[in-house]
Amino acid sequence: MNSSIPKLELAHWQSLASSLLIMIGAFAIAMPAAPARAQHVHPAPRSFAPVVGAAAPPFDLNTLDGTAAQLQTFHGKPLVVNFFASWCDPCREEMPLLNDLAVKGAQQGYNVLGIAVEDTRAAVTEYAREAKLVFPIALDLNSTVKRAYRIFGPPATFFIDRRGFVRDVVLGPITAERAREALKKAGIDL
Amino acid sequence: MHTKSIQVLAVICLFALSACAPEMVERAASHAAAVVHFGSERSLGRIDKNPSTPFLRYAPDGRLFAVWSEDHDVLWPEGKHAGGHQRMSGDRSPSPMRNVFLAWSADGGGTWSSPTRVNSSVEAVQGEENGPKVAFGKDNKAYVVWSIPGAKGDKTRANVRFAMEDGNGDFTPAGTLNEIKDAARFPIIETTPEGNLLVAWIDRRIDNPKPRQLYLMRLGADGKALTKNYQAGEGLCECCKLGISFADAGKTVYIVDREVDANKIRNHVLRKSTDGGKNFDAPVEISNDGWQVPSCPHSGPSIGRDSRGRLHVAWFTLGRLEQEAGIYYSVSKDGGRSFAPRSLIHANTAPETLYNHLCVGDDDTVYFAWTNLDGDNKAQVYLRTIAADGRTWSPIQQISHATGNASRPVLALMHDILHIAWTETDGETSRVVFRSATVNR
Image 1 (tube, each protein chain N blue to C red):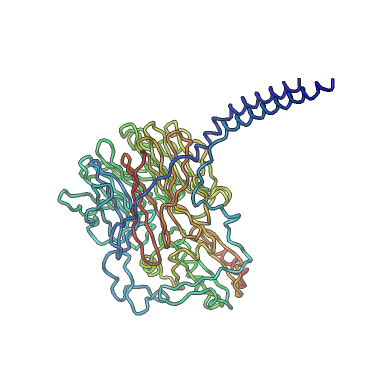
Image 2: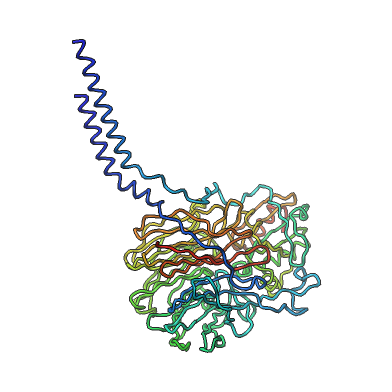
């Protein structure tokens, strides 16, 4: 009686081992070869959207006339930053409004800065002449500022208060009413 | 009894896993396609003229052609520059004038002919998404289209220009194809199988209520108009390039574009003609991405057709959530009546509009090239393939190593030689980069 127990247990363990071998074999058949690693694939960030309430990312650009355009030089007054391109249809449509805002800004104590993205000096210079732009235009030739402000493409307008914090963002074309609302958030009541 | 149960369980597991095995192997294969090994980089055009926006195409005689734009020599005269803040400090303004150049290679891109200027008069030739395109007649004659700003210099109210080789090594004087001036841009040109030319563009002669229309016209091999301009569709996004493909000896024409609806949702559609481009069926939505964006992303789709008649389309979208942003792919196996659910080729690595192009090989492998940001936040060109089985994807390869940014990749394929070209910009300079690879071996 006592001797039959170990025999049964041995058979049991042999059977279990053979079953495990079958399962391991099955996995070996089914499991793929290690997939080739994709190269240079970066995980997408959690959010691409510009952040209202955060400090505006600093920039260091030059305007068409060669003047330095740095965010810090605008501190002390609210700043409207408009990202645009000479080839951009809605950008052209909103330029008369931005020109108007720039004229009012000179009287009301805020600045307007255009930042040309994905464009060339020649094309932007020609466009500024054609559109009779009255505010300074900076060239973001390597898209570094555009990427720091996290916009997919022009037009996009940022309203920055006198301390350098983003108070409102308009992605896409802007209207006069929306501009008034955004300026108010940046500390300007038109 | 217990032992038998374990054995039965093991056998069931074996069968179950065996049944799963093909799918798992397929999944593994979906990452197992070989990478493409490109040769060294070559430059096209004159570096000091900032060449950009290449387009590649093979002529029937096997020569590879490239068309691109470059700065014109002259600066604007004194006093022509902008006033106020835009005045250049004591200097003359740079000229927006650019020229179209065409060059060919008879050895698969190893060496190139001297570039020939295509535009007869000095013009502000447009580039980027709106760059020049070339097609070839059966006699290898080159036909080129490009866009120039309208009379007031407005790029968005532009004109489509056309010139063809004159048989003496030069080009005919350029003519404007759009009958309503200052209303057309983003032209594409294809030679129809019967030897005529089909030109399509985005037109804004009717600004409301649904902006931007698809306009076409036909030209003979002699460059003379066979038709007037005619509308073939409406609701097009205002500045995204078009894609075109032919089938059935030219009877079937497929055009893909980014459409914009009343809610500013910009999905892509396929427009199909079965009478050689005279009439088009109602557009078929390729994918309901639901990207609602108030302005045009300036990045159009690409289309290619394989030997089995399947239509392959690639495009850029943000989708409904920014986390969906990326380059996508779909295929139609029923001649454009329906499309498979989209597949992600590469997710956006940062907020950036991405640009894409695809081409289809003799073995029905589809090659995709696109831009995305690398770990240093610089735009680079990437490549990936999907095999003829429709499942086997290659790894993503980075093809460019730009110190500034790489953009607007374009592909061309002749049998087992794959070519890729793109524009690299760094500050105020640009260049066209070209590379080749042997595939299908």
